[in-house]
Image (cartoon, rainbow over the protein chains, first blue to last red):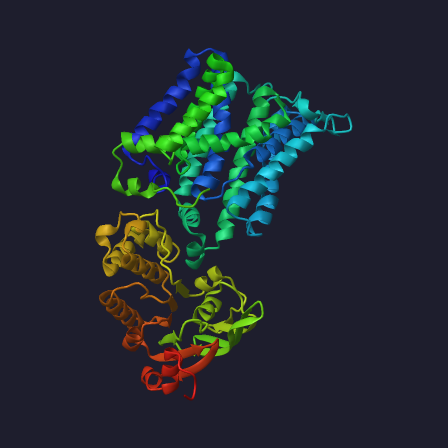
Length: 353
Length: 240
C-alpha cells in the first residue's frame, strides 16, 4: 500500500515522515477532547480551505496550469449547495446528496471551461487571464441578483448580501441525522481531507502524475513520447476545480451563508498566495502551508487589525526572495536530509506560471 | 511489399510560399534513410510533416499501411514512430532516471521498468548521472539521453532530426555506431543530417532535397559522385 503513496513526485517518503504524519493525525483526532468547541470549529474552518489549495497544487504545481478560477468553482459549489439545500432539504442523507450534486455541477462547469481552454490551445498567461475573467464575471453577476426575481425555487440569491438559510451538512443516523457543526464538522472535514490527501498522493506518484509533471516541464516533448497531453491537462483541471467546489460546499455549510465577495478578486488571489507560499510542487507542503498561513493570518488580523494584510504581504515577499520554491518545500529540504533522488527533483521550472 | 513509410505528393506552404513541394519518399523497413540538402531545402519542414507537428497542404503520408496524414503526433508515436527533434529537449528539472521512466512507463511492465532503466543508463553511459537533473548534463549527454528516451518507446521507425548537431567528432562517430547497432537490431530510421561524414558512416539510402523538391536520390556513393549535388551545396549555379 505504502509504495503507491510514495514516489518521486512527493517529498516525505521515508518511515520517519509517515511516523510523524501518524502523530500529527493522532493529535488532530484527540484535539477536540482538550479544546473548546469554538476553537475546534475554527480549526475546521482552516481545514475547509485546504481542499481548494490542494486542487490548485495539482493543476499548477504538478500540471503547470496557473488557474485563477479556484473561487469560481468554490462559488459554484457553495451556491449550488445552498440552492439544493434550501430546495431539496437535508433529511435522510439528502445533505450528502446535495454535496455530491454541487461538486458534480462544478465539475461539469470545469469540464466545459477546461475543454474550451485546453482544446482551444489557450496556455501560459492566457490561462490565468481567462480563468480570472470568468471568476470576476460570476462575482459581478451574483452581486446584482438582489431582486426577488433572482431565485431558484425557494432559494433567493440575494445579491451582494449573499445566500443564507441553507441547512448544514448532516449525515443520516438512527433517530434522525447528525448535523455537522463544530466538533462533528471538524471530524468530517478532517477525515475527508486525509482521504483526499492520500488519494492525491497516489495519483501524483502514478503514471498520470509522471505525465503531468512532464507536461509542466515540456508539453511538446511529452506529446512526442506518445501522450495525449491535453487529456491529462483536462483531467487535472477538472479534478482540481472540483476540489475547490468541495471547499465551497463545506464553507457554505460551516457558516450557512455564502456571498459574492468569497468569489471576487481578493478571494481569488488567496489560493494562489497559499500555494505559492507553501511550495506549489508538493502536496504535503501545500497542506501544511495553507493551514499555517490561514492560522497566522487570523492571528495577525486579531492582534494587528488593519496591518494584517501588509504583514502578510511582507511574509510573502520574504518567502519568494528566500525560498522561491516555497517556504515548506525549502524548509523540508533543510530540515530533513532527504534522499538524493528527491532533493534533485525540485529544481524550479524556468517557465513562469 | 509496401514501404514502412510512404510520403506521396506531400506539399506544405506557408502564406503561399512552398517549403516542401510535391515530395515522394519511401522508407523501406530495415533502412537507414538520410535526408540531406543545403540550408532552406525543406528538410526540417518535411520532417515535421512526418512527425505531425502540422498537416501537409497537400499529399498523403502512410505508415505501416495506415494513412496518418491527419493524425496527431502522439497518435503516430502510439503506432510505433519515435521522434527526436533537433534541439535537445529533455525534462531538465527531472532526474535522468525519471526522464527514462516517463518514456518507458507505457512500454514496459511495471515491475520491469527499473531493470530497463538501468540497462538504458548503461547503454547511454549515464549510470553515474542517474540521479542528477537532466538539465545539468552536457549538451552531448542530453542528446544521448533523448535518443535513449526515443528508444525506450520500442519504435519500429525512429526519426532523428540532426542527431549530431553540436557534438564533437568523437561523439558524432559514437552516435553513428549506436545508430548502426540499433538498425542491426531491427529499427528502421529516417534521419535529417548535415554532416556528410556521418551520413557516409550510416546511410543505406539518401534523398537530397533542394528548394523544397526532391533533387536526387540513391546510395551514398551515387550522391557523392553526383556533380549537381556538389553544386547546390557549394552554391554555384546550375550548368556553370
